[in-house]
Image 1 (cartoon, rainbow, N blue to C red):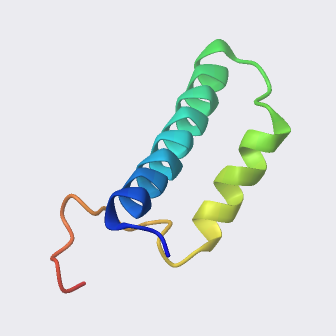
Image 2: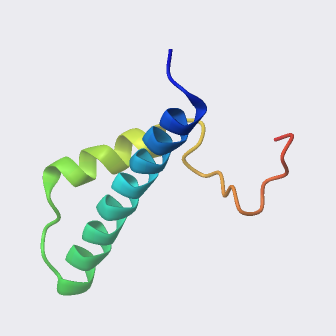
Length: 63
């Protein structure tokens, strides 16, 4: 069974990976080039979840 630290590290890694995708998509948009199709698919899959529009900074803890 995974420890709490391992779970936190895995989740942090997931978040950082999504941030990298977001940055690459924004950079492609700013440069006026087509984004990587894999990045677009990742963004679509995240947006399709129930969490796509959730802003955890402003969400209450019991959300």
